Image (tube, rainbow, N blue to C red):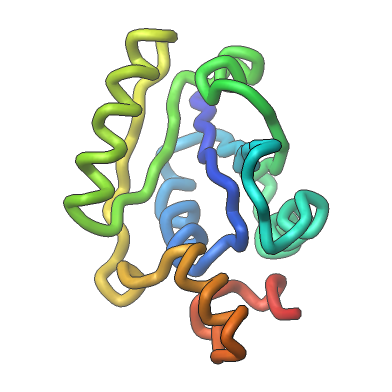
Length: 150
């Protein structure tokens, strides 16, 4: 079985994440959306809400599972018998950042990173931008799936 892990904090999940996942479905038998937990990070949405938002967004997609984890992503991949890490790239800065992580992950475990480039119409969206729009009372509804609406 070709299983991939799509790691992130998903605070919140965006339409860019949704696009990457939908486009990756044909590549894998199963994709685990892995919500990383970092005790030092302050989140806008609780872990339970983030998980619920994602599960609702993919409720009709049996190839997608949602799990949470702590620690190294490669250790989570090993525990889940996943040979691939899926990542979305919005721009060249994302690639430079992700390249080092992919190389490190490859040296730590037998895990390959697969990059999918975001479609141009969604490349400006990031979770941090969405959080800023929400904090300042802006309209974020065109940036996230309906499951995130407060």
